[in-house]
Length: 314
Image 1: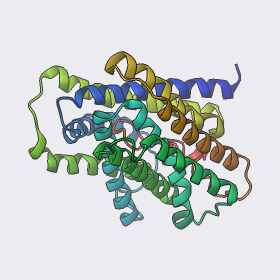
Image 2: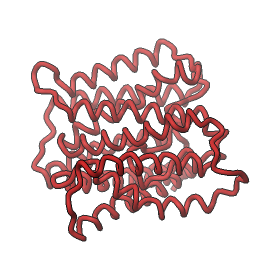
Image 3: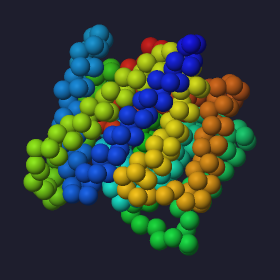
Image 4: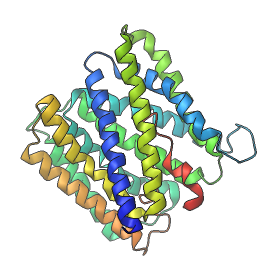
């Protein structure tokens, strides 16, 4: 079996585990606010993230080289987690994934002002087509848009912001800074709001939140292994396999059916994202290749940042 095939299979397994993570968020969301779920998931992620921190051989302290960029990224990651968790609790899984798939399109757009990336005609058109796909999924005028739709789109936007910032400063900051500050910020922000939303939890639900953190951590390990074995252009598109899991879990657990319009819009978004990946992999005008180098899942607290773990391989 070739290395690219191994990498692709590991990535598929990673995103299958991530999808299981999202299903538990959805199940708990019927009883608890996203603030409470995110708070306890972040709390239980600290021991797991510590396992990554002890492997950081870089000498130095916890002072960020770029404190304002670190602050902006940390707040963005806290908000992307909150928005994504909320969207999962109120929208069908397939719809949430379809909107989150717009993140590579937004990364391409943000790479222009923040990375100085030159985006040519082909990728610009791909972004426009992809955003049209988002509109198809949202169906304005024919369906009632709510806070869940706004939250999913904001999650995609904040995820793009944190990814671009990580690309900009990642080579200059210690891994411990890139990992710890966002997690601590999420914990503190959700903790500050917890008094307004807290509901008493039985032990089994607290254990479920621990499982969320563990699944995110395990999936990240498989994703690191995937990027280690295979080219980024092979691994990156595997994230779109989550739409299959969304259809399966949505039907089996939540009696959700993926309608034709959602399938059409998702197909447009995925095709646009794949085109951008192909264009970046082929070289040309893309110097920073921001989408290919986005190796993280910003809204999973237990998931350590793939781009940080693979920094020396970039």
